[in-house]
Image 1 (tube, rainbow, N blue to C red):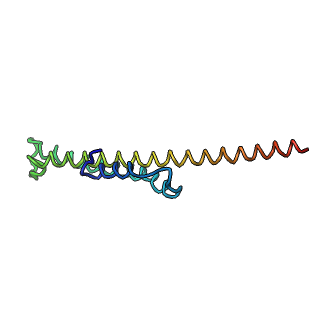
Image 2: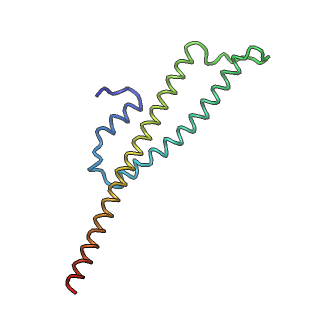
Image 3: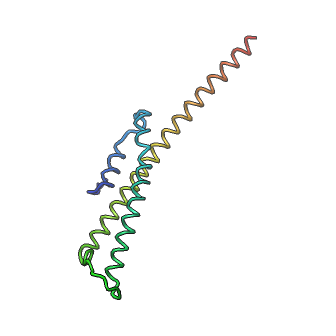
Length: 131
C-alpha cells in the first residue's frame, strides 16, 4: 500500500491498521463522530471556495472599474485548487471512517440485542416446559 503524503493518505493508512474487532464501543463511538466533523468541514470549505470564486470573478471582470487585487493569478491558482482537492479528500476519508465506525458499532448493538433476545426466549421455553 502506497501512502499519500497528505492528511487523507494518513487517515487512510491509520484506518487500515486499526483493528475494529478489538476496538471498544467508546472508541468506535468517538470515531463515528468523524462524519459529523466531515460535514462541518465540507460546509466551511464550501463557503471559502464560494468566497474565493467571487474574488476571482471580480478580479477577472475587465469592465468593472475596481482596483484589482492581483491575487490568485499565475501559479497561485493551481496551488489553491490542489489544496482544495486535498481538503476534499480529507473530508471524504473522515466521512468514510465515521460511517464505518458507526456501521460496526451498530452491528455490535444488533448482535447484543439478538443475544439477549435468544436468552430471554430460551428462558421462557425452559420455564414453560417445567410447568
